[in-house]
Image 1 (tube, rainbow, N blue to C red):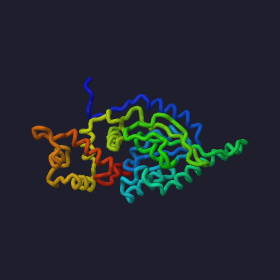
Image 2 (cartoon, rainbow, N blue to C red; image 1 turned 60 degrees about the horizontal axis):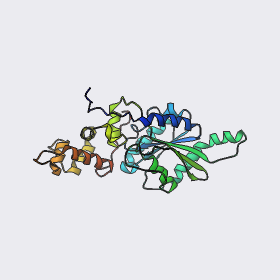
Image 3 (cartoon, helix red, strand yellow; image 1 turned 120 degrees about the vertical axis):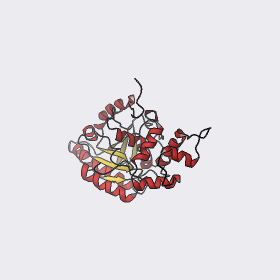
Image 4 (tube, rainbow, N blue to C red; image 1 turned 45 degrees about the horizontal axis):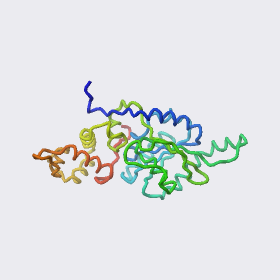
Length: 285
């Protein structure tokens, strides 16, 4: 059977094991910090998060908020808070001004369970919090930021953090770093494409050319204008890989367009925030 290149295929074997391990560890923590990608504040949420976490209190961090417009992000913060009844804090790995707020909220969410343990005669201990999120949303970067160190392994590829470990933030808070969670099967290809845009899916699961063109196609009018300006593409030319390749003179021997190279650059430039600040989700999408 010929592989369908238009479909994003993802069946990493460690994912099922990670979810099973996560469920086992949930009994050890008082609350959960869920890290989302601010560029995909809705699509980067694990679909079955409520089923997975049950009644555990949850703090939602919208990471990489430096890559999106603040005014637009505020709309999503309000929407997510109303929908989930969970506190939402925008953050990024570069700045530390929100550190105290994150720590304070995590400790507050943990207090009910700690009080329940004290009522049973146990001594007060540090709040224990689990960090969860899809691959490459920045869980390890957030933990490194909180600990002001680089003890947790970080990588640019999806799924780098494989092993769970406790990380002490301060005497009041301990974090359990966990592998990124991802559904074993992805029926929603639109969500899958968006996750590929921000590198939350292994590069082995998709074609750069298809995903890069999908990114260009999903842009709204104002976003497309920013892309055109960045690549110096005239308004009378369609926004596609071939035209960007021609405009940048990224050509193969013989003069044909270098679609693979162009696609890699488009995805890289977007992911690094070089082109502009974008949120690709829509409220009530």
